[in-house]
Image (cartoon, rainbow, N blue to C red; front, side):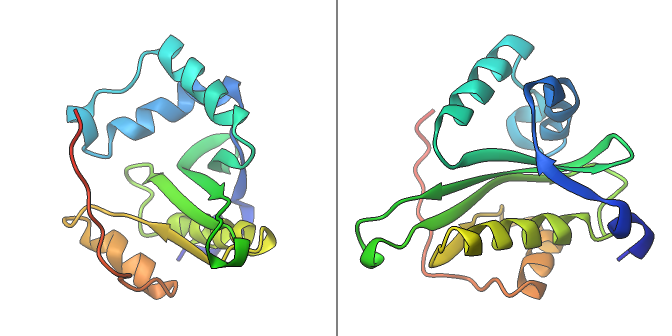
Length: 154
């Protein structure tokens, strides 16, 4: 962890004006063969996300440079005595900046937001090949939780 970076790192909610700096990050994830949404489509989806009560995109910023991003959805539940749960999605750190504590700070921020919202759990999924990310999540207290099932609907 690079203490100098972490001391000056700001985790903040993304704004529409940030989209041109955010979208290239998603091209690095290995999703969709490096392709990302066109600007107009990204803007429409970003505004739709903001219409949800507790669905936000957050950025890790150092001196105005976007170094990382993640989405956090806090959803209400009728089960678990009404306690909400948090779902983290689209976690990414800029190439060349991984391993310096940015992902750690983003996840700590997400966990704190979930605690503030009285979530009973926070979950995320990660591709099997992202071994370094799995080490990070375990170091923060994440455990493999049950089974995750998915179906490709594309």
